[in-house]
Image (cartoon, rainbow, N blue to C red):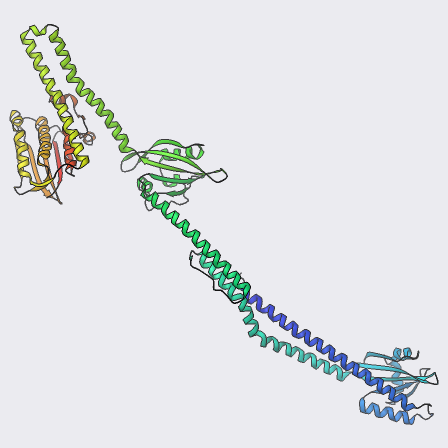
Length: 589
């Protein structure tokens, strides 16, 4: 049920006060008027009683005719009934000539009291007249003896009618006063209600978030103090909200700019906040997360277990969490419980740092160390073994010693090739990191022809034809020497792994704002599970065959870093039993 406004509470109250005041004034005025009229009537009866007593004279005449005439005239002129009652109770004279009616008058007891010698006045209701009557009983004394009682009765009908008219006029005046006071009462009530409504409306706008809401200052001192206090409170609240908003914006900006994922949950594992980095990582961008349980939106058992551990752990914890999406990521998670000022746990904050590349680099480093050790150990072991064989006496056998020395020379060349490739790879990586590789627009046909010429001897040995398809005017932003080295490595692998007599094709073309250089062979192909790793150092699809063909395991790694130094990329498309196509993507000039 809607509540009434303050105006409609004040208006009836003010109206009732005005009406009550008018009625009270009218009632008091009527009472005063009635008392005055009764006093005047009583005084009139006293005067008439004294007058009648004087009319009796010092000696009561035996003939009461003169007294009766005076009494009748008085009754006729003023309506006052005069009755002379003897001490025995007998009516001696009655102005209306009906002494028998006197016996039942309600003022009889007044006469009985007057017999004692004192005048008595009373008001009684006369049923016969159907109105009130003022009775006056005065003793008539002669020579210190009671001669009789002079009884006067005056009807008060006129007085009662006057009183009724006064009451009616009082009610009418009260009603008129209430009606006439409505505008004033309305104005007075609005003078209180409107400023309070304005303060309430300003408070409502403030609650809706409109921090500029203020209440106008009314003229009344108390209401003005209320409005000023509200405006002061609103100013303080606006300042504090502005500070909180600024801090919140700064916090959101920090969280949004963080590469690490940040997650905050309450004690029931409901999400309090999640920054953009983590939402993007978990594929939850645009999904409403506030106050939803973590298990509802994140289908990751490792993360859920870690959050549960963080909520119950007294100290910060750390662990690796696997996140599976478009690709598997390794996240280093740091979790710490949140506590209120009293030390009670209220939730936990989790920071997830993507260490996938770091772990991958650690794995590559371990593989690199192991592979370098293995690759260097093989020729060194071979050289050491054959040298010891020669020292043990094989040197005296000219045939064996020459064969052993040739093997030692071959292993030394292999060792030298590995070291040269490692140095070249290190140099290229350093130039790539410092952006020292100078790139300039250059025609590609000459670079491709030089690379093919460098591999022509090896191709003739295997009866392999290397073909070139490149437009004469095709140019790209390259470092010719480095690009030629990368192409030589690709051509060398293509020639080594292709079947004898099968062709190797080199093509170059511009498409989609870039230049693509492809080297296609007809070799055994590369299985799909190896294609993502063949550009790693010392990674071999077939270790025995690669080592037999004299490869160092660093050729494709050198190709990858040379292409990256050119701000390009290299890809492979291979089918088992059909062949492989390596493509270098460069910026067009």
